Length: 482
Image (tube, rainbow, N blue to C red; front, side, top):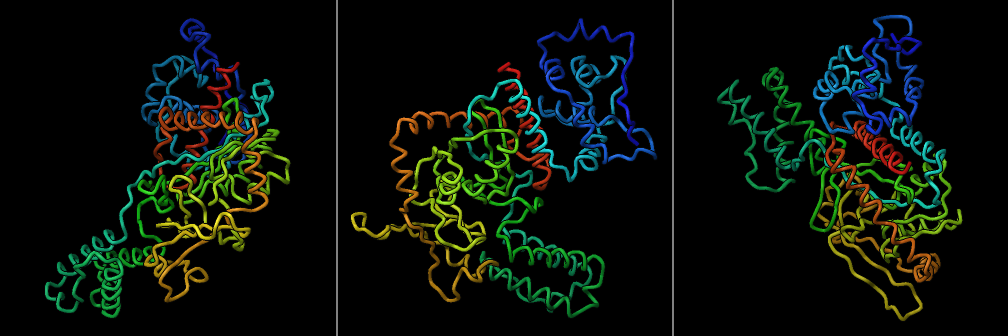
């Protein structure tokens, strides 16, 4: 049950805060800057108002999570520190002698109260609104980029997982019946995924037909685990406890397993929008969402600053329709071509290659057509056809029996020609110097506030983590500029 009124702490020791917590303390300045009652209003419907024990104030619980992000500490440590750190007690609006919460309450708060709410956009909107009201944001430009976050769980190849789970299944069977080995197929000794899959399917088939062994609880448990792995392998080449994380590419030779956070930021370094996706997604396709969210949060935008990933034909067209300049170096490979909606291949500017809808990176590229001819040149990207053969999305993309799989893009269009001319202007050169600012912001999120690795599994939990980290860096920036 949530009280309809916030509990006000009266204590004869409250005067200690004026002595111990200085006026320039970060937490005192945050308390003075922002009215946290909006958290109470947003979460009101998540609590019962008639039954059960009186719950801890949602504002206090939210502030505990904010302290965790500001100081990069665990649930247990943030609660323990709030027991003796007077600046923490002041920030949490506790009486100096008041006892602390149980750390497990923070987990419940995250799972029960913050679940299914758009915390990311709520907190960004709040800080952008404050920055606009105080006249901090004066520019009409947004700088866009994406930063990657590693999954909490390390990935394993499907081959490794299949071998391990078939091994555990055989081990249980031999414990039940040491003679049953003669009924099983010969295990694959190669490191070929297709052969291992064929062996596991044959193993599954034999056991499914013999219920005298497959219905034994220990065997059934391991068999179901193997079946689940076989199903997962149809879609993914990497498996992990974090089943929403995906493999992304930072370059041709460098990859990561996890997620991407696409960011928009004003020239004053206030983050105005954020979108969290899985790791294989391209940067460019998220620009329309970042622009729309920034505008919804109150930003007037006449310029977008980014790298080559954002100069695709769709983005240039969107910018033209809204009379917005795009300060992004034109790359011949950024055009998305004339594919039907939902069938886009995305350009990965770090690797310099296209990524197919299934998340596989092209292995090489070649240019076709002559520059001096009037016809457009094309850039053709070639994919690993062996992966295409087993891909769950191959229908309509890969032609059965084809020896190659390629994707071609036109290098020039009228939009590209206009952009090429724009790149030669002084305004373009001047604005392009602002892009470094978002690289520094990405570094702050990762190195200072722990956003380089996910705290928990799943995209929703990372959105919550990102919400707190971005809220923190925006508040710190606003306080610095004030």
